[in-house]
Image (cartoon, rainbow, N blue to C red):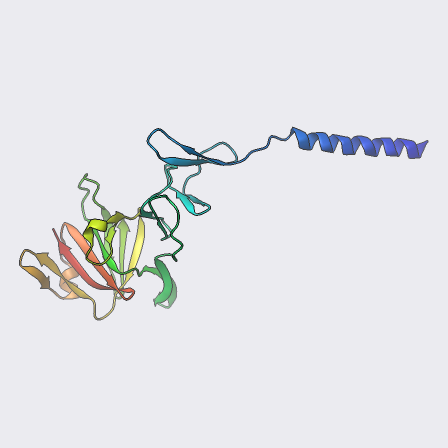
Length: 209
């Protein structure tokens, strides 16, 4: 009699577990495109994913999939939003003050305004020139080589550039590049800061219009 009761109880527990599993709502994330053609990803909880990767695609702070731009962690996504398969533009093979740090090492020109122009131009909130590191906080515009028509804007963040004893400092004028000492550059200012990177380091810092 006791054995029959135990079997019945065990059957009831197993049946209850099976029914509870079937009663759980099944969620699955999916992509959604709005009227303007922007893509969003709805996560398992029914919310738009933000500030994260979904596969080879990155969702920004507003939930919109990034296209033709750099992600905050330094990867390039193309016109279709897909990562191009190349490594991050940030590297950790430079060191400062005895500790590892990441620097912007992709060759090209980076620039930003020291005031908010209101016209969508990258805005730098702070600039600090140390003994061997340039640190800027804000947004930066970037173009490879001399192709300024291929400019893209980087996300807001704090970016570091490696400085060396060969880094040039100066001011850009209509007459050309006016060189100055590092100390004079630190005490100088200009509406726009230009940073030229080659071979992984900043080769030139220039204030200009």
